[in-house]
Image (cartoon, rainbow, N blue to C red; front, side, top):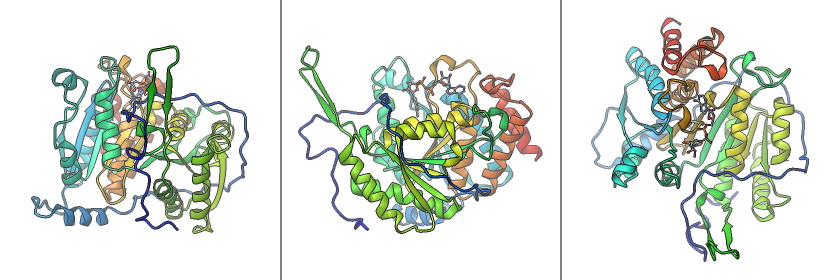
Length: 425
Ligand SMILES: NC(=O)c1ccc[n+]([C@@H]2O[C@H](COP(=O)([O-])OP(=O)(O)OC[C@H]3O[C@@H](n4cnc5c(N)ncnc54)[C@H](O)[C@@H]3O)[C@@H](O)[C@H]2O)c1
């Protein structure tokens, strides 16, 4: 096993290339090769997962605060960051369930709202005030975030500063994206239902092509060259793979699939594969297999039951989790966590700001509501997280949803329906 103190490549050093901020653009993948596949066993009902225990993190934070004002141990501080587009609308619905549970179950959550968005950026030129990142790091337990992206900021500068800024600067290396079908009628796949669509994707969140490393040469001329680096460190790869295996062990999942494109991206791929095999050897009870990402996308559609836990790099994870969201019923249905065990972590629906729906009471709030549940689970409130998921499931069954999943309601009414099911359970 690698010594955690082993020096690793610093993406911002040791390169002759200019370092840029990343944006959210995606590349198209070529396809052709078929990965090695293995069948897996039926998945038992999964226990819920509290990533690495809230109390350990609490103690760590308290120890690190060193003279900072002491909050009661029962208080959990949440930074609420609605962002752009439909972000504020879906976060408002998430806050309805959080506020209700906070009051009725006395959870001790304390919410602070931050209005960092495209409007404030365009008005002031500031994405996030100086010191804000340190404040979040030191004084908060979790961040509940909507979405970023606004057509008036085409270079996505504020989004990169805030969202990627938090992922990188808070070292939120685990991107945790469950893919769970809550209702058979939402399945886009013929013959595949709740039993088959139940997997978890872990995306590496701090390295890969998203470090913004690269540059242009002779920009704007016919001879222009652009280079975009894909960075993998042994430490970065090992910790996300280990997290995936730990998750599988703690939740009773049977297998972990690592997916990449090591037949083409040989250097990084080789590091990923060697690390995967090495970590897997410490978890002999968990089946492990490798699959090329093009084959993975095909198999996720053809036979999603093949997968329990998938671990992959930043870019491939970005892409396959949208496919995962589609398997759940659409982008409006999916939740995600950006986690660093034992530290402040960030929770957001996986969809973006969907500008065309902003302010129209049209966006599906379920992704944000399930994100609120995931955050509660992270904070140690497993029973409340389960209650939220049950209320969402009832609202879907009653067709009290937005139109993207076939219901007649707007965002606010769909959020109210979930709240009502929560209150009457
Ligand atoms: N994490 C993030 O903040 C994040 C993620 C992805 C995209 N973005 C940004 O968001 C902006 C829009 O990007 P995009 O259009 O590619 O992706 P998007 O996720 O915002 O929307 C894509 C489409 O999915 C559907 N959709 C998404 N969320 C929905 C919801 N809650 N309810 C109903 N339908 C929903 C809509 O049809 C929408 O047009 C861009 O600026 C992009 O960079 C941000």
